[in-house]
Image (cartoon, rainbow, N blue to C red):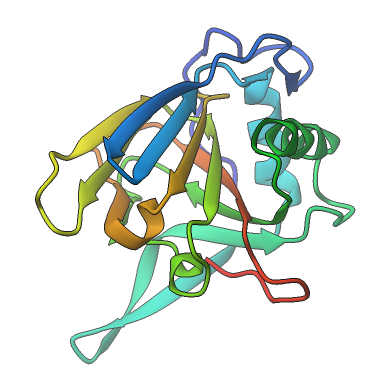
Length: 209
């Protein structure tokens, strides 16, 4: 299930590791919602893309729309952070997140966008239905692909970021309650894998998208 060749990224080659210098740039969406972005959070992300692509068990999800079942235009995989198949660098990335935000992250939910014809429509993560002000951290591999956000109320202007391989994006505050996000389809979009982990799940709960 190998994707098309990846475009070369600035910090994509070499062994994968968390960057020594990490510049968190905060984007305030509204008074209670924010996004942090770190460009080049991971070094050597292209090799991690190939490792994750090969070693994870990818599944084809299906959704019921207007009385008909449709294949989701992406593949998904879910596992725990201590799963043997999880690359060691993921643990290092989570440790860096926990040091930054002083909260415990758990679970790893992954999306594989095989080409620009894959994407995901507007939605909010399910954790926002159960947890007040969760953190949702997304590490992007491959790409670049656009990541778009919009205010559910329509009062604040929409935002979008072009995420490259190795970039990190963290949604925090009340973002999962008041905003939605999407990965739009693109005629010439390259393959991309997103690694998502979250802070806020109750102890012992099952992790889901």
